[in-house]
Length: 481
Image 1 (cartoon, helix red, strand yellow):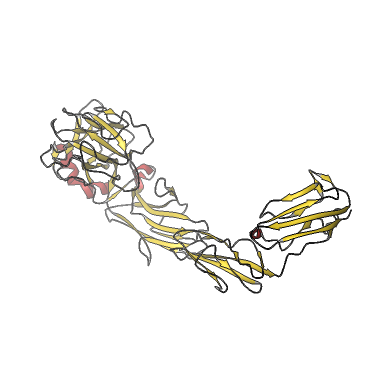
Image 2 (image 1 turned 135 degrees about the vertical axis):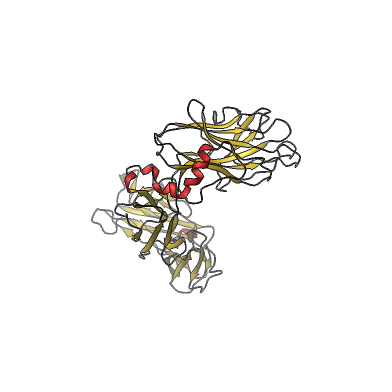
């Protein structure tokens, strides 16, 4: 399809097409890769049965001979003769395929691929680990095959004995498609004889285009930039493609889901892309894709650069709490909250406070004061919030209110009754009937009704008590209509 593939891998491809079988050291892409046509990641929760037609699936760990499972880890299998595998090859808490090989050769993986790009070099590869601890055990030995649907082998590669124990290693080889672009079958087969050993883990089986080198970088930065929400800086992304590309077409792409999906950036079709500020926090991944002009419509055949990352971190979420009242001589506790990426926080000023480094410090100011809660994340993102503290000599209770709809003095409220006082408020009519009640710590705010029914004008009695503070008050007020 593309002349640069011939320049990049031509001699190698000719050898691979006509000499069978290949064995020994893996022949992996040394240039740049395109998006996978096949990408078997063994995600937990997906349908795992039928992946390996030569084996039987079971859901439990430590599969017996001729069985496999999909797992995130394996521990203590067969009297600890298998190494403990705690993660997949990427270490991102994904799954992998765990196989207890059968006594006879069997297929670990088979799939049919169609709609490939003609005259294009592809890499067929997988990450593999020998999980058998004893050195004397039979070592895994796997053949990668590319066949026609009728079973004719077009190319193959054998890993040879995999002796390294407990190490994820990628194995694979190149294959160049034919001009008529036929459908092909990808197959991975166990070669080793039956017996003690031949147990392995597989992860990330891929089949993807391979081309000459394509590189991307962020000007004057490393490949990763961390900024904070609201940052207005622009960044210049520079791409470079190998001279093997004869008439390259460029396209910058972005991913906002950590590389799972990529979208073309409209108008970003040169080797330089200036990224404008992004208001929303998130992880923004960028890459430059390249394809020859003659194949520009075949976007699946693009070759992509390395990825560069611009992480826009959110400001910490900070709350100093609602404004407060404090009785002289009776400390209260501020109710601060702060959340974010590995944040540090403190109160300022630290006057009359037991510990400015606590979210809920105890305070005892002598006069009204404003306290500010500051927070900073590990990436230097900051935020703050303020609370006003009024210091009062006692509780003021209004002696009248008029809920008549004129918008003035519509509710009977106690302005200095802070929730931390844990005060209980009860209101009674002149017959001693309870008309309104606020449990300890609640806000007293009566609109002069009971279950929506307006109460008549007259004198009402209040009782205010607290078990935590010296508050024991009784008195009367007037409801005026």
